[in-house]
Amino acid sequence: MKNIIGLHGAAETPNSFWWPYLKREAEKLGYQVWIPQLPDADNPDLSKWLPAVLKGDKFSEETVLIGHSSGCPLILSMLEKIDTQINKAILVAGFVTPLPDGPTKILQKKYNWDKIKNSVKDILFINSDNDPWKCDDKQGRYLYDHLGGTLIIWHQGHMGSDTFRQPYKEFPFLLKLLP
Image (tube, rainbow, N blue to C red; front, side):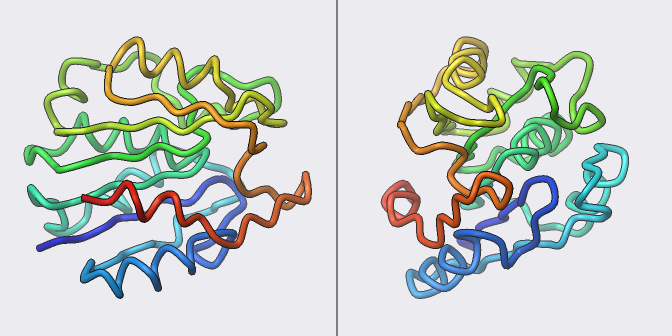
């Protein structure tokens, strides 16, 4: 089953920024797309978010995980827990170390980098050198250094932020990254 699981960030919903665009366009390409509303989205908490996304049997060799901001450390935690090797993970404006004003309950104290690497065939990081939340190129480089894959550095802000008036309603580049 060719499917995408999309994981929004803090204070977001499945209707924030480019998520509706991604869902609509990926479904046209034959993907089944699930973008759940994560519980208490204003306060990302791994103890609440992880069980919400691990329910059911949604993972296969054709699964693509896409996360934005706080959805990215959630993806890393998911990859530590699942038994299936998925096709691809795309982390947009991801982070894994504490941010100056960011959520900390979404982060693990320690990550099993080998387990994460073995749970995904291909992993990509898209970060900006001007991310106002500091989910920046340094965070992307840290992830890349631990996991390999592909690191893409842009000058695109957070790629979706109400606080910093970055509506980012479409994200056609993501469609090009789909297998």
